[in-house]
Amino acid sequence: MSGGSSLGVGGSQGFGASTPLGASSNAMGASANGGAGMETLQSFPQLSISELLSVLSEMGTPATSEELSKPTPEFAAKVFGAFLESLNGVTGKWIERQRDAICGQLEYRVSGS
Image 1 (spheres, rainbow, N blue to C red):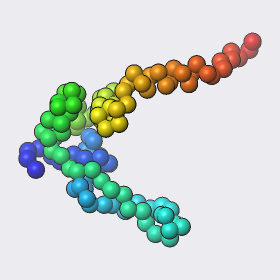
Image 2 (cartoon, rainbow, N blue to C red):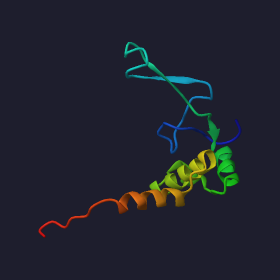
Image 3 (cartoon, rainbow, N blue to C red):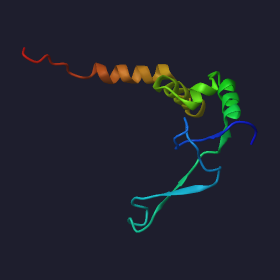
Image 4 (cartoon, rainbow, N blue to C red):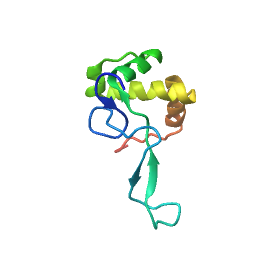
């Protein structure tokens, strides 16, 4: 891949280093066969910083290499939201409406009253 360090999901370098598409990693835990083995987890493809910046720009979510290397919670939420909308069609407004509807059903009690 071209230029820069490779990024994926699950490591300690910003959004993290990853294994290439199709590769898998094992995780401890109960498996479908009753817990007798290891689960196999699939990974996302590795992308260089410049490739990821290009993808984010095409999605309408411009970013800098600094934001990818040292992401803030706000930036991570922005990128997550962009991928959620792109892949599932779920918008931030839809999530807000769902949150407001659920919170509207809660009973609020003031202590000491």
